[in-house]
Amino acid sequence: MVSSNDPRVPSAGNWPADPQDGQSISKSRIWIDGCFDFAHHAGRFLVVERTPGISTTDLVGRMLLCTKNHFIKSLPRVLSGEEGPSNAQERKRLGEQMSQTIRDYATDESGLTAGCKVFSWTGSKLAMQDTGADESGICRLMVDGKGPRNGQRIVYVDGGFDLFSPGHIEFLRQVVKTEGLLRAKKERDNGSLWSSHPAYVVAGVHDDMVINHWKGVNYPIMNIFERGLCVLQCKYIDSVIFSAPFAPSLAYLSNLPFGNPDVIYHGPTSFIPLTYDPYVDAKRLGTYREIGDHDFQKVNAGEIVQRILKSRELYEARQAAKSEKAVAEEAVFEREAKQQDAIHLETEQTSAR
Image (tube, rainbow, N blue to C red; front, side, top):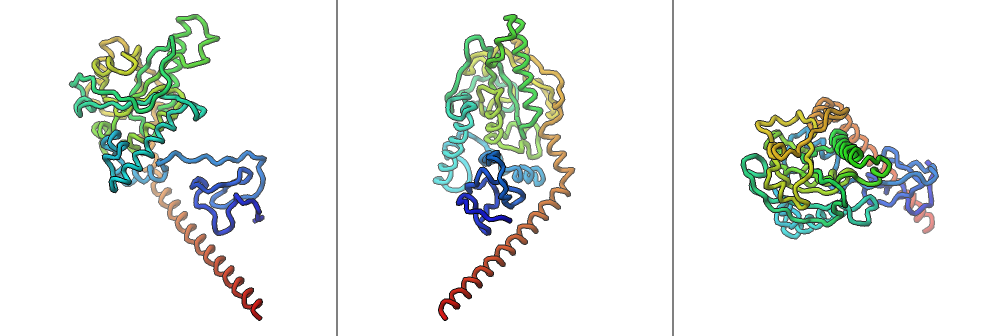
């Protein structure tokens, strides 16, 4: 391996275990399977930091072990430092960090100016996870952002958005596409429609306990904070409401920050065994619409978990191999360090003579 005098490239034995752990890495270098390749790549290499707090290894572990310790009972209480593990000081620090992450994800595509408006809804347990409680609740602004523009229809969608996948993205894309076609038909002007969203899309994200009530086992695999970040980063979303009720009642819809939505969309769902229709009020209002079948409709959290479970043996073998490799690398580093110490000692003894 060719050495480098570039101060941004760690020396042998001091390489970071992961390219995204904060160690500055030269953009002209590339990281391959735990080692640096010192060949130049015309400045085309860029390290992109992982989503804070979301580890694919952690998610796979939750699937395999069926743990629930990632659940969040109340996101507002966690963000304020009132709820969570550890002591009060650590809870406050973590809450502030999570709040800042939400603000960062709510920016526009430039990452510099306001983007999504973010709200948190509070209501009774009955209203959050079941039907029969026609209450408006309280919708509090968490992060200010861009509101609807003149002429935009208010569109409401809701869901768990667990393991945010192509199924979710395609559904949201179809929603925006459908609204664009409706607007084109109304204005008879296709050329000027796609310079901006034809609709203002508001996404309600359900609480962890609400999803677990209906799906059971240890769903959702991602907690509401993690799922909310995934929804916030989607270009088809203009506003997010954390802890939205499972059944959008008339009182809830009428008291949303932007007023009663012009339309409520729902996609093809076969994963939740419902005992009632959560959209009965939207249907009574005549604002309920469905997005038909699409190529990714079967890509949901349940399908992804099943794929992981089927590949469990391969995963465990890979993890074992990675552990063995880590042990071997550590032994090499120790041997190199001892050799360097021996050389240094010999040099000192030679100088003393």
